[in-house]
Image 1: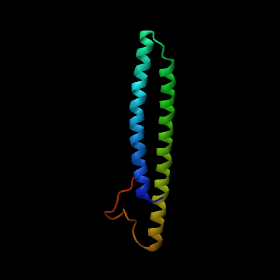
Image 2: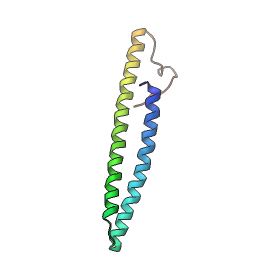
Image 3: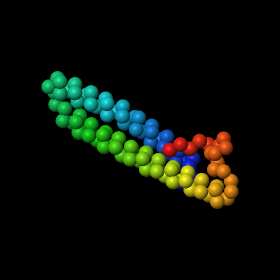
Image 4: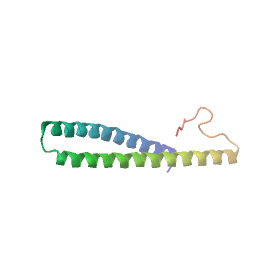
Length: 98
């Protein structure tokens, strides 16, 4: 997978994480409200656990993609060094941060 594709997937994972962070926060507030009102919150709590699990999966995916990006960047740098030319981001090229 090339760096550009990895960066696109990272951006998608970050959007998913942001969306799930919002859902988890909203669901926590709902559970608190239901509990505070003395209402049945069992289903809301189950959904909260599902959201938290999904968030953990998205974060793990983000971490995996970060690792791939680091490995791809190192491979590109090694290839460029072996060829005697600077890495593509070294002289005003794309700034690939990990």
